[in-house]
Length: 388
Image 1 (cartoon, one colour):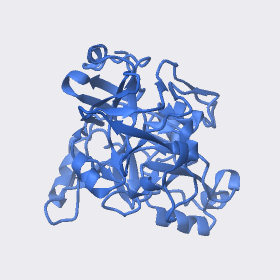
Image 2 (cartoon, helix red, strand yellow):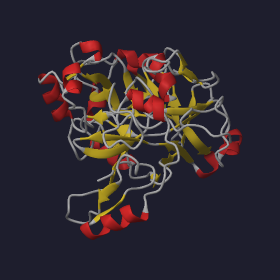
Image 3 (spheres, one colour):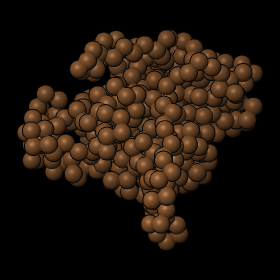
Image 4 (cartoon, one colour):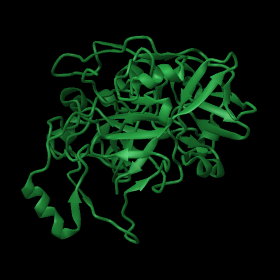
């Protein structure tokens, strides 16, 4: 397989890939060990060099949210159970389960409990039924994986927005990853539709044909009922987390993230925050953070495009760090104001409370100095792990 980038969820605005990262020096490793601080996994060590050792009773992770997943933190990947369903006409549908709106269903499936998904309505949710043999039957909605993904960054000094962007997979007007089975709303992103098990087994070793499957799939294998995807580093409540992306409600973020464009997700209201009727959670995307590789405060779109690294988004509540989690992330872009830059206040942001405080002080604002608020873009990004 030709070298390719691992997709990052950029809250509906950009996506870049994990690249091989340089190992920590021996001196760095030795200096960390006496203080119960250990080197981080290779996939995150450039931006999070060390992590607490943790252990029972310490309150320190790692905490894995998707209990049936297999993680390779050095490679920056997650391997999930691959589910097979079908359409009413019999076409194979290959998908994963990541979240459920009811706690009992989430425990039974080993996925995240996301109560907010019950607030998704209209075309954003499609109905499924269960056949006599237990197979899920999807009544409507289809994804075309044949388009060629295209992203051409802008010219220096501003790489965003890109000069050209086209998603590599497109859902029809009825496709959405959210499905209702009985009283439960599940997050069930489709990663392939149409190919038989035999055809997909040709991709067990990672030599994937992206005309047949989702652009964030690194290997897919019906024979072993597994699929491997790339992970993204971000932060929630000051702690590093890992997640992946599968859909976006707009062609631009879908192209930039390697995600499926799912227009039906436009039926999910943005800006709802933690209102009782909200189906989303906020994700803050920095536009003009420090961009140099290895900079201790590196963060943001420009950095991601320039260095092909994670933008280090700041997410709201995730499991164990809040009860307001949703995999539907409502992007709030921010940029450091001229006042903040002149005072050399720019630093890496890792929690919402600090961001809101900086907005109040006029150190952060929306794009071009506009009011801090939603961009109107939603990306489906299930969380996998709290690093500590």
